[in-house]
Length: 486
Ligand code: GLN
Image (cartoon, helix red, strand yellow):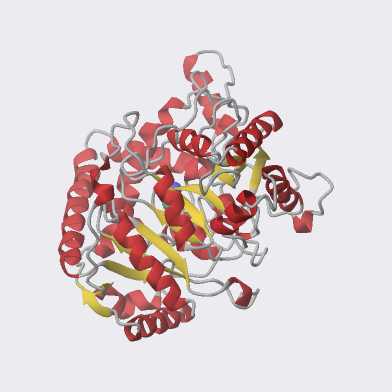
């Protein structure tokens, strides 16, 4: 897999043109995607890509990038193919959020991250399959079929940004964007042996991202290395007046003081918790701790007494926000519309035909949680618990730089193995806290790609930093990456 710098070098040395780099990506996509290449054998089909963007749009970007290079204005992203999760708007292109509801929906404006990539001369090439409206952990909830894990095609790639992860993992592009509401970047990164980064809440604009849980959602990168993920984060992280929760730029220049101290939640010592984690993942985690210690880091236990409530908090706040965000897909304003005898019937027909089971489940859950009489019992309690969790993490970050856990407690499962939605929700046990507290969080693979096989599955380690300390987290993550992959 080529890194960003390697591609950049090929381009500015004129060893390759932008057109050649883009065509290489398209060829790789064609050898993995039936939707793009009808002649492909079904066994080869990963189904990570829902479509290449229109030829006209790709050509326009290629020409612009080549011109930037020829005139000496290239940056690291100029001419580099990038894949987007299918919930990030690109003006004039179909963006469906993995849903039948938006099968033919053409975006009417660019998301702010897309505008920034365009400005840099990066090539927005294709849209990636995902769990419908980003609800899921395996990409089995897409209306357009499951995505296979390129490392073992009988297994899921993780979700909800499974297509963004799988496509980068098989080499379609060096970078992609996903969105992470409760782990949807980090979990697929761990399952596909990539680096996946969930930025601090407010550091990347959500303008033009189809909302799932508005107080939890962040757009973030998938990459082969921490360095590439950081470079991509630096590009897409800026103050955006179009997003009311976008942070001002000051925090980006914060001074970095490393304590060289990593915290491990005490709860990972509990037998009841350990039982829920695959033995090999625990062993790998302990091996990494030893390596990190011998590289000069101090590793200490941190007390986060309420971290075991994180999933419960998430599965109250998230569906509540989902039910309100999904209200706009009513068969009138956006997408699919199936007329009935009256407005209510229009509404029912369109939503019944347009939305899948998991989305409906979340709307029902969220509506219940927000209904009179239950609002105080569920929603308000979760909001209070969220504050408590935030304070517990704040306290921990006084003494440690980052908190480390495995990214996932389980290996990528085989298709259909988790048919019970609750079993699926449990897959996010380590990832949801960062979204609840707004912290940056990264998943780093512990194994080298070349050592993986159907018998040796990937494992990710997750580092979570204090809110707004994204640059500090990247600094540690680069060091840890070098230590654990040795
Ligand atoms: N798996 C989690 C959920 O289904 C997280 C989804 C996400 O991060 N978009 O809610």
